[in-house]
Image 1 (cartoon, rainbow, N blue to C red):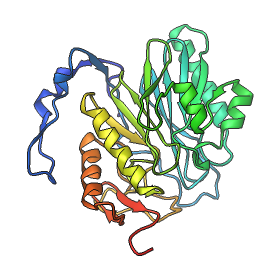
Image 2: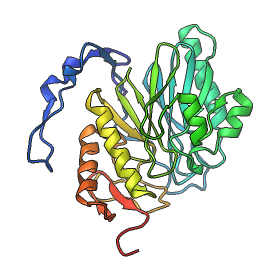
Image 3: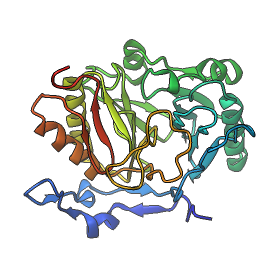
Length: 318
């Protein structure tokens, strides 16, 4: 079992030994001392050493979704590559009153049946009623919204449309994209940070209970496709500012396209990825991204970095 201990509360002071870090692109030493953020705890969890691999032959059928229990109130789901080459990650979080699902997958799958089973499993383990489900999206692209209709119909879930007006209302965001919104799951506040640039309605989620930043397609180990470069730069700046005063245990995106070998990725539409990089990124990766974008000085260019590639849809000369 590579999950480790589950749901132990770890004081923020445990970060002190590693809070003094030198980002290799910076001359000055940056102090990232999360223990200075004040009193509090984060609920720890575990991530697998590797994720299930689809292929290379999908003719024998489509394997089940991989479900990983990070801790007792957070599940990470991955769609198999034989179902869709995008292999997106979904996140299911539980509060005392509601459950929140980020994204609904790609293509035709039984994601509604899977989520139904997980809701019932969680409720049975807690001796509670099955919680009402709220669905939100990291952004509006089809590989993250395909299961919306089935989940709404079968589970009676509240599906928040990946549209600016709907997000502003649901999360009470006073100033898009500069404001911060939130939603209360019952004893668990999830903050919402607008981060357009990949899409026009990209939305990051921050869970203070675990210290996890869910970054969607804006930051993950792979090709960071950028549609609006100036907006994307501003969004990364906002994420850096937001995380400056909050503990970040992991940054979890919605895909893996990177290999374990630094600077190397898998080509588009690859199903079989036997040597893929870990899913989780760190705040240092976010800082590296910010630094690289600033160095471009408003002139978009494709730039491979160790953990991801900056990939503007339009570059200089196009």
